[in-house]
Image 1 (cartoon, each protein chain N blue to C red):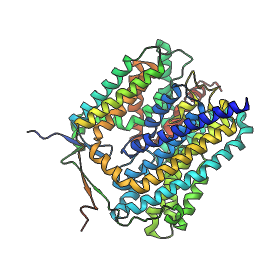
Image 2: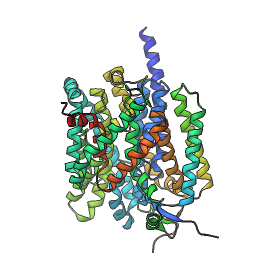
Image 3: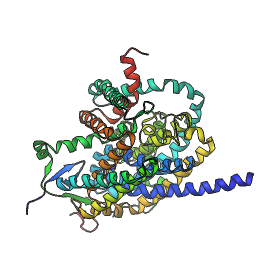
Image 4: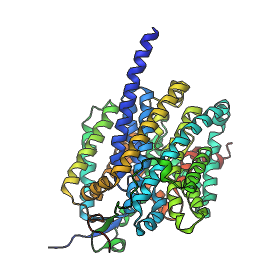
Length: 79
Length: 460
């Protein structure tokens, strides 16, 4: 299996492919939801958009795994 | 009749409490997520609340509770795992690394929460007093507001680390913003009465991220940021955590003094960039610590107090005294409170609608509820929340949401053309940012833009 390309961006590690996927999916759900709102209502437009963003974020948080190895010092004390 | 108004007020008060609690809930979660830019998370949600047509007192309470909560929780990922929670906490990183190396993070986090509470407790009354002192001169200040921004851009350039590049960038940046506005007016993307500002502001804040993303599309530059393995993060032990919740017992005399004095000072400098002030005063305090080994503690506690004070004064003073967004906080994260037609306009916003005491009640309630709740929450649960976020929330999704927010707000501001306009703003500003032109200078250039272009044409 080919190893995924990991990069350091904004202080954390991400996989390039996952990053592109996340940007595309969340932007699509956000704008998709926004465009479904009634055209003449700015309030609903924003709410639909934010809702779409949360929805997209939830999907991506479920699908993608954080690229972090987290150790708890209370469980594994330093020597 | 009198009874009736009291009943309404009780109802509003109840809703204000609900607003404050919701703000604490929402921004505790957001604050713990590393790398969440303050403006991008404060503006859209407060805008949404304003657009529901909610009572201005409720809006104000929500916003105050939101900044207080966010400013405290944002420092948690910074202190625990050295990932900045937002823009404001990035100056703490070097000190956080030093503290973590000594295994003292849990103790310092408690101190920071205490200093943060001091920052809020000091800046709420002082900001209200300063605002009331300024009110008689409000009209004069409004007349000169445009020049204040020009002065601010020059001042922030001269106090920054990279003076020349900042100074030289001011006019070209102003040209960029004005040319986009004139383009939109020219092609009819927006009516000529509409001045696109907030999406440019977001373009500036998201700039460095956009530049980083663009670099990924160049294979050579992509190779420069490649890493071999996942990020290893050790969450420090809580073994040396103190049991008391009394903020005064947690801080040394020196830390209390620096936190209080800087919070007072920051209130008088409310027109300047909050992150700039936090770096300037926070580092100075750290350097003045009597013992070398206390430096990191003093810097981090002072900065915690400063972050609260800069935001509180930056929103309370312009909103109560002027009704004009005359500070970086008011112009960016708080913009929805000043200008969201048809609910708030420059001539009819929270400043004009609320009386002095209504304003004060909203600010005090929001600040008190948020500070008390988030203080206890942080002191008790900073570590489990951080562990949860680090293990469950992928960084990709966080970056994805930012890009989506920017696209949405740019689109709502001036249509599809503005999505690319904001992209252009982000690329230019992000590039300059990496060359040392800080956010403060860029924001000031944005607000000084019409005046600067006027100067160029010789129209004074």
